[in-house]
Image (cartoon, rainbow, N blue to C red):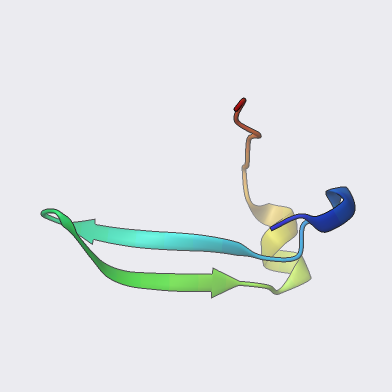
Length: 42
């Protein structure tokens, strides 16, 4: 999530088979800064 262009949190998902089996909410600024992210076109 990046309201006003500022990244405040990211979600990661673990998928096994056809199910989401785990997720993680990342909100720590240091961890967010270390992520390799891309903006997808609509």
